[in-house]
Image (cartoon, rainbow, N blue to C red):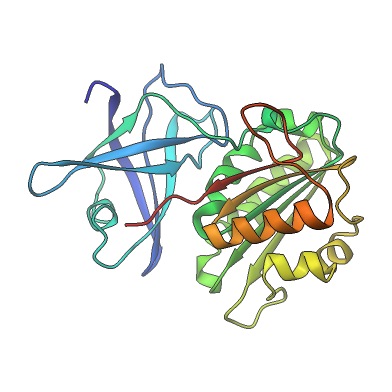
Length: 258
């Protein structure tokens, strides 16, 4: 386990029967960029090492690490993870990685969009707490789409604690746009639909996506990534970040599968 840091669980919060988050200690020498992910590792009943990739939800200036996870029935990893309590051990990989860092986007944008489903919210909660992005963009839009209202896990934090702190910081235009698809809610259409029918631009009072003004990050399930990527490329002529070039948008899959 030399590639991992041994950390301790500090707190666990179960949002509902299928979603929970936790905080753990953080080594002083562990560095990461907001938006990156790490490997979490646990020891199962057979003393085997199992691991999964998780985006870091906390900011790189926090003295703890925070993660958001679903609970998967009979999940090999999450069945152990969800039962951790304060003081339990967890191993965190020493080397973070990921594409969802704002340095990967082409410079000179005006609007920064975060499009997420489910636990794909995690990297964006980390990024929006990076005050450097507000020096580069005049408007930041965070869209989070879930099935049920109880899965809007950080809604109170965003609408109250975070929003007030950011407004006091430099009065930027920050927009939080939650979506619930299977219950009655003010916004109930999927992200792909509100882009196609232009509702998101009407609701946010922003113009259609433009490669001259808009930069976009996307994190969620694979189908959502493919659909939105196709929309951006076919309708708006956007190109994606790659190892060879900065992009107008960047994507990453929400990792948790078992």
